Length: 153
Figure 1 (tube, rainbow, N blue to C red):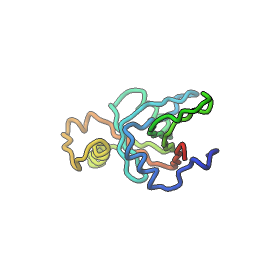
Figure 2 (figure 1 turned 60 degrees about the horizontal axis):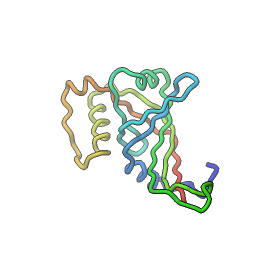
Figure 3 (figure 1 turned 30 degrees about the vertical axis):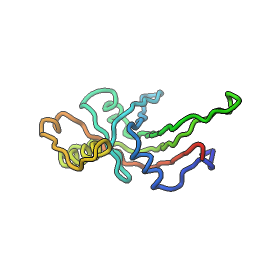
Figure 4 (figure 1 turned 45 degrees about the vertical axis):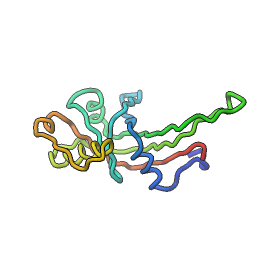
């Protein structure tokens, strides 16, 4: 990271940013152009869970190349200044990379979907009927690397 003064070194602080986030931006490889899609997600240490319908561009790209990028952010306001070029933004962000795997086992699907639901709810358990499990794809992303940044530090 170029701006070491903004880097977040504490893994617990990085995880806290992820837990507060409502959207993950997932970067995928689409030939020579990147493809970025916002997704709902669930997080547990070292793993990100997402879901998808069985078709579509996201699933096509994950199947073709399971290497992904991740981004989470939280903007808390602007930092005004006299000069327009001196303005800033207060934010915290996390970027990372990982390896996506489509989950086939129904028990793992339930675990992944439960992690996603816990990101957005206070409940611990959720019912997932068989027909719903059959119609959804669950993707487990093994997180290989993450860095955090805060501005102003």
